[in-house]
Structure formats: structure tokens, C-alpha cells
Length: 198
Image (cartoon, rainbow, N blue to C red; front, side, top):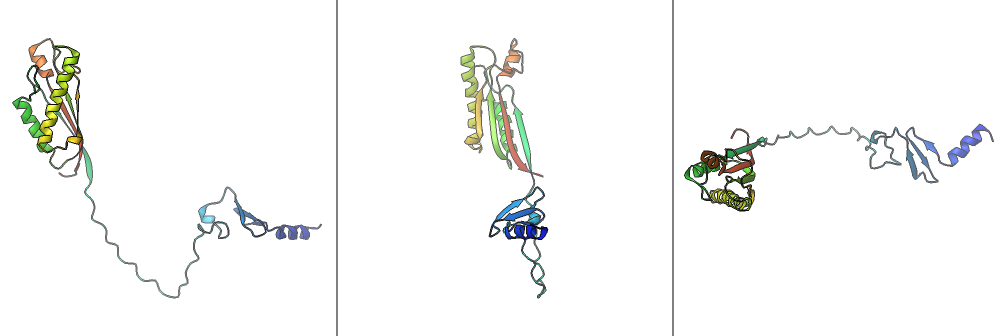
């Protein structure tokens, strides 16, 4: 069989090489691609959905595209984290907020105007007098008292989480009366977003 016959046999077997793909089968329905194939080299017979449509004839001048109106820019949003550290909010063995603590919480709720609150975490603390079990319960009651104040002043209850940590993390010396008074506190942490410029 000569070169021409081999070429004819190859042609009759429907093998075609298009540079990046090989096609085979009596109806050319089987396609293979080599490693150089990209969507830009798609062929209609194998990659019909990827093959770009033929350019339209230039019979009529295209209509001028409609001017796009830019949408109004949404205000940029920045994260705002406000932390209120409250000292001496509670008397010994009490969960009633002291007047100076109420003022600080009122200031905090005023700062929340215009803030989209994601979460508020209220952690209650005690001094070191008494058992851990008792102080855990007391510190949680203090946190719950702060939550009740915030909810009464417009904060969504489902955004406020409370925790009692008893005498963990003291800020004052528990060996002195003044230090113990500093440790009877709550810490309120607010995380939310506020539009820039507010």
C-alpha cells in the first residue's frame, strides 16, 4: 500500500486533526482534545455550546447603545466595635445596677443609635468572697440585669448573650475593699456595623 492509499484509508476512517483536537467515528461524533485546547479554540463539531457564533452581517448599522445610568452608590459600611468597661456597677452580693452603672449603660444605648447590632456580649463578674458556684450564679444574674436594661432601652433580646465568670479576670486586688469593689462589674461588648460618616 503506497502513501496515497494510506492517506485515503486514514481519511475513510474519518480521522481529522484540527490542531488541538482529534475526531473519529463514522459520523465524526467522537472528539478528543489535547493539552493545548482552550474555550477559545472550540470547534463547532465538538464544542458547539462553546463555539462563538459567526459574526452577523453588516447590512444595517447597529443602533447606538443606550446610555447606562450608574446606580446610586450604596453607602460604604465599616465595622464598628464598641466596648464598654464598667466598674463598680454592683454592690456586694447584689445584682441591682448601681446609678453610675445605669448612666454608663444609658450612654452606651445612645451610642447604638444608627448601629446595626450584630451581637452584644455581657459578662458579669464578682469579687472573690464566697464559693465559685455561688459567684458564678451571682455574676450571671448581674449580666442578665444588664441585658434586661439594654432590652428595655430598645436592643433586640436575641442579639444579647450573657455569661457569668464569677471572680475570674479581676481588675482590682481582691485583698482590698477597693479592689473587690472594682471586680463587682460587668463588661459589655458590642459588635455591629455603621455607615461611614455617621
